[in-house]
Length: 124
Image 1 (cartoon, rainbow, N blue to C red):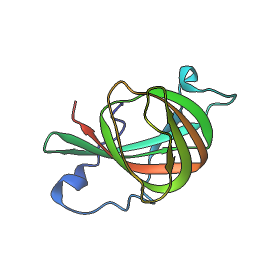
Image 2: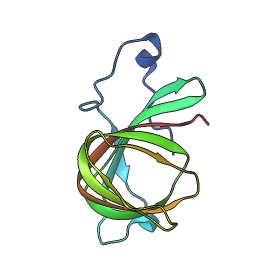
Image 3: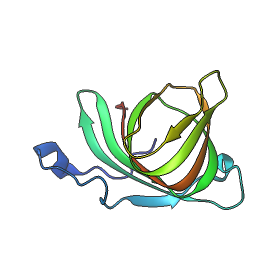
């Protein structure tokens, strides 16, 4: 995960409207794209709290692969399925899904509707 933007105001206590917050966008790296096209991915790192990085992440409809970091996230909007190469069952994601992925898990993300999530990961 690359820290794209740290929202300094978040440290002082004001809330951030995660469903509509502005993100910084870039194309998903080609080595993660499974099908043609390069979806846009947006991210906004809000800051660190008690050794945890808190942020917002979004991806357009696509099929992509990843090697996960240790992360907990809550889906705010969208529709997707995450498939795992290990014995972990597929996860169908939608608003309100709370998920823990472990570092090193190899995944395939099938995103049917733009997915936005709030994530918590170890601070780097």
